[in-house]
Image (cartoon, rainbow, N blue to C red):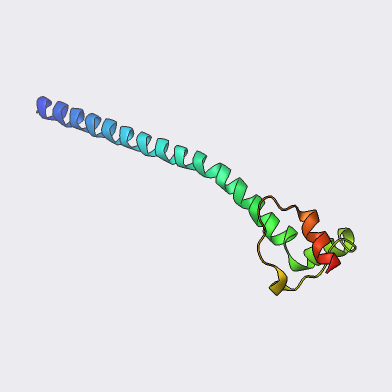
Length: 99
């Protein structure tokens, strides 16, 4: 009878040890995943702020009137061909302004 009780206790200790090790590994994996997600959440918040606040049509119109009223020129979309890398923005503005 004593042997049976000792064997049962030993088996329970082994099972407990196995379960603790398994849960520890799972907790470590969860921690690593959460640490990898943290910078992505921060980046998502920044992008959402930019999208919702800075690129809202009302804000863009406000910025246009506030900062670029004299510098922006309306161009017909059919006149826009292709912009190459070596073409500067100022050249494009001057060309279209003179036309």
